[in-house]
Length: 181
Length: 146
Image (tube, rainbow over all chains, first blue to last red; front, side, top):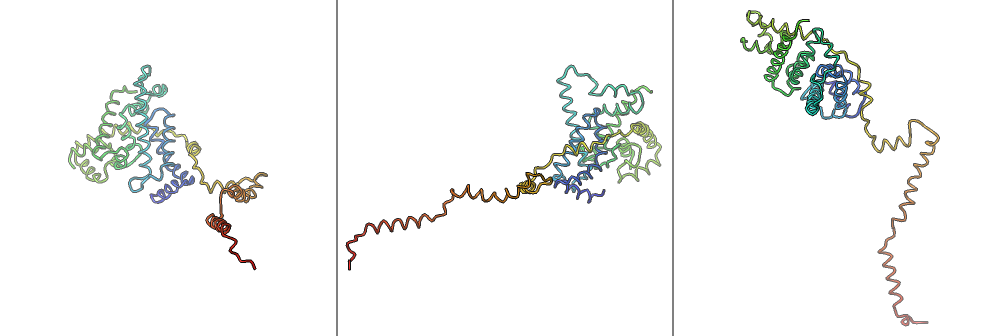
């Protein structure tokens, strides 16, 4: 889908056109879902955030400015901010809930599944600070350009490079500590 | 391209030149080809890339039906509601009388509002009341009888 088509569809969505909305949903739902799934550990949270992202596409399409960002960047930005909000909320809950466990909300099966390399890497990614994790996921897995990643995280390009380098360094340290399977 | 800049690039974006900043890609690749130190740096980042690549893309359940079902439906405009009331998509016996009821609405409104509206020119009425009153006050003896 080219930018002009997308722009036209967003305009139609802002007028309440469900057919146009369906086309944009089909085009962007997989990528946004993958990003949110990589950011979060609980499937229920992923579903809630993805639904909220696309609800905002429906209700706030009129506010989308094609000249400032691509739709994909705009949707990832909403998803990123919702993930960060969720992490903050979960931290507050953990601070007030003294009986909570210390695994950071990971499902028991996630911990048990950490018996192979990919699970170890996934756990190491999950333990990264949120912004480092988001930068790495957007840049490495989502295939967004450096400019787009920087825009989503509201950073300059040098600041993005610094954040990504810290993320990779932390990850290397984490993975070096893991025993070989 | 100097060694520090090359290090910054590979430490941030990894070993795949496709991920490097487009404007510096060619220069960085040329530097890599000529520098054993750069090749060593790259190898370290290749190891991490290989580990990152072991994480498969998450399997995603299609949520589109759920998202579409939860979309808030906009309240139709008054004219749309009136049209829908007059010409509903599904006809029933009750809807047969709707056009007649709609036609009767202006009549009912007139009956209700009619007594509230005074269309008489009150100033003209007051004027003639005064004239008649003044006439009664005039001396009738002045009239000459034949």
